[in-house]
Length: 541
Image (cartoon, rainbow, N blue to C red):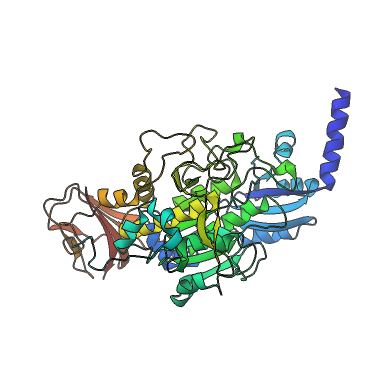
């Protein structure tokens, strides 16, 4: 026993000298009411509209970290602040074990969690690490789109994406954020010219370099973007060629470090604030760290144990769809999915061959707690892509099956703009070919987006023209008109910050609803029926 204690003390003395990664969680925020009163200080109008359309109220997670807490941590000798998360009210820091532990004495620090889990279990709560680099009047429009897909034909037609494109659902009006390793050549290469000419690259950020140069880094992100937004006639057409994109770098190719998880969460928070609809990420985290003490295990894949999976779940709770690659460890001794593919809310995507057979490298499920993972599959072997020089190339990995799927998510959401992110996710899963008999290798299988589109066709007798809430503006009441065939009517009014202020159920056609209890101002409303949903703004004079 004495020998064991001396070894333990020696271990502690060594850790006290080495540099560690940790998350420091705070127990409060500041000036909450001021942010709730003026939500545009936290989110742009498109982000607020996305919340209102899905009945998602602002909450504590949306409030920024107290800057005084950040400055006090930064001023601590021996501590370097690497990243921050308002959602988790935490900072990612690096420093010696002793310096980090000392932060627990600050009255605003709730807890400290080391990336090296052994330090949490023997001395100090959380875990983290990384795997890395897998690396209505008429529904059918008169003018159909028929792309010359070229060699990219199979990866789109496998998902029946061509049928969706033919109905003019090509991602237009939707915004996708790509979280990856770099995007060199996107500003110059020909397959991205269509995006550039139509101002579809909305911006981005390099979280690793802490600068605006996102046309840098590894070409992995360039390949990923090409699978969604690339366009070269008769050679390559992405699954969402008319979507808009933000490009975020969170992957540091010089090392494998847990800070990359924190960069990822920062990027997801930025995506939320910018009104993004879909997050696509081909990064995964399990093992292979520069410091093996930071490696994760299959037992960590429980849906929200890691910092990045917590962040991915929160991203979904803000109204976005999060699509991530399942991983390329199918032939390894540990073949299971990593984080954030294990997260409860994400759509994790495995890889199949052109013949719809699982690619041997594709990571398998289930999650450690027994949930179906991966969620769905798409072509991830011999995918047709563009490199940074504009050459049309072929590459394999769930890194590409994920974004191929993310592009289709944007297209189907364009077709059903009033659906919530959960409804879009459910629609995709239920259209998949193994939905009734999922397996650890395929999850729910390969989605059929044409089937999803057909099953969920809007009611031709319930269009925006048939459902009305008027007068607008109004002084005291509104009248709601809708076809008598529509049932289970309900209207909810929200303030500009997303708080529910009035609700009326069991609506009947031409029903009047009094707004006299509401103060003058702008409000959002959401009308729900058994087969139809409509949202909008109304002004109370």
